[in-house]
Structures are given as structure tokens and as C-alpha cells.
Image (cartoon, rainbow, N blue to C red; front, side, top):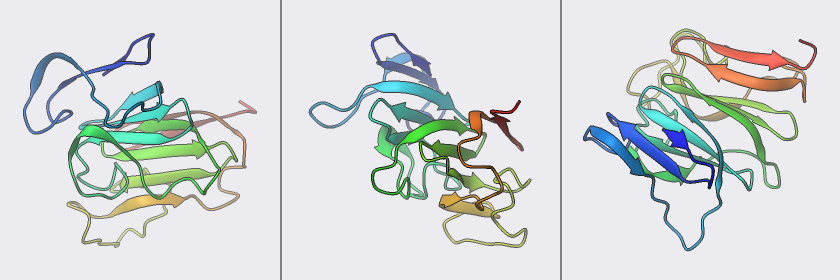
Length: 173
């Protein structure tokens, strides 16, 4: 996926825009009369997250293990990620891993959701957890706040997520 200067998004590849592979870039379509503009994007294995300029978060692609917020529905059109943040709070940072997602809100809270087979969610899911909403266990299919104190509120300046790991850059370096 690519974010263009005017806030439009081009997307291509397997599973990202539905079940068929898309070989050439296509404009991402949004429903609604005038959706907010995309401020940032992050692409995972078969899903992507979009941080909108109004501080909301949308996702599209496959929701195999709750990486789109637990709908268990694959979406070719960006949908709001449910379960975060509390009313009046906006998303500040986000990162899409292979099959998990990370979010930091403007009040400094950290959230993780999706596949947790290598503790990439920060051990918020017990190793033996099984969930009917997950196609692979263990997973956390809805955004869950990391324990207060695990990451000091307001200290995260950047996020990154890989296949089996997550990274947070803290303000003190």
C-alpha cells in the first residue's frame, strides 16, 4: 500500500483487497459521503491499518486472528477498528505486524491485538489461551490495553511490528 500526498491510498497484492490477488495498484475506496483523510498507514502480512487525520483507526484485509479488531471478517474496504480508544481519545501511533496490531493513543495508553503465538502482544494473552474468534491460538481478537506501567504513559515515540515481535521507541532513547 502507498499513501499519496493528497491522502489517497493505493493498494495491491494478495488478500489485501479481498480474496483475489491484485497485480496493479488500485485506489482504496471508502464508504460514506466524506470520510476523513488518511494521515499514515502500516501494512502487515495480509492486513493494513490506516490512521485517519481525525485520530480514528481503520483497517482492511484479512482478520484471521483479530488483527483488525476482532470482526473475524475479511474486508476489502477500510472499516473502523472497534474497541479503542475510549471516547474522546485519539490514536497517535499504530503499527501492523504479520498478524497483530499495535496502537498508542494520545493519552499514552498502549493497545495490542491479533495473533500472540510468540508473545508479540506483550504477554497480555496467557500462553494456553484459546479463543473461538481466533483461527490460530493464542490470540487476542479485540484491542486490549497493555498493563499500566508496562510502558510509561506518553513515553512511546514510534512503533514497529514484525512477524513475531513488536518494538517501541521510548522518548528517553
